[in-house]
Length: 193
Image: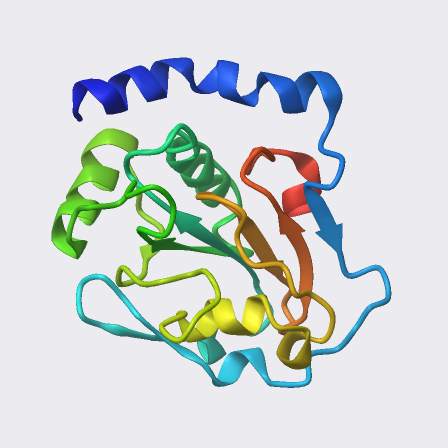
């Protein structure tokens, strides 16, 4: 862990303080109308950072939390919270991190270095996708294209605002919520059991 990463990890509680004090207005969007996806979520596959392919169809019946991540961000300490959430609910919840360098060059590492960083510094055991683009554009990861296009997911057009935005898909392949970076993965509204 670099000096900068150590400092960011140490000040993470301060970064999250405004959300604790003032709430998360406009930081959470939910599928209150119970919109059904127009394109089947389970038809997609994810390229993992180790070269394997992950078929989303195998997770029917489980909730899936999809998170865009970065190793050099003020929110990077959320890796520890994501791992804690995963360990607590892994029989009912799948977490997939999507490393991306879309915000201020905060993920410069390659896939192998990202995996090593996550394991050594945060004990990450949940899935990590191959580094990709998560914001809208020609190179956008297909999963994030589905998550941020209401013509596909049924209601949500919100692309990630920053690193560590979270999208929750229920056990039926329905996108149920978007949670911005300032919402902790351990916030009960994210898991929503």
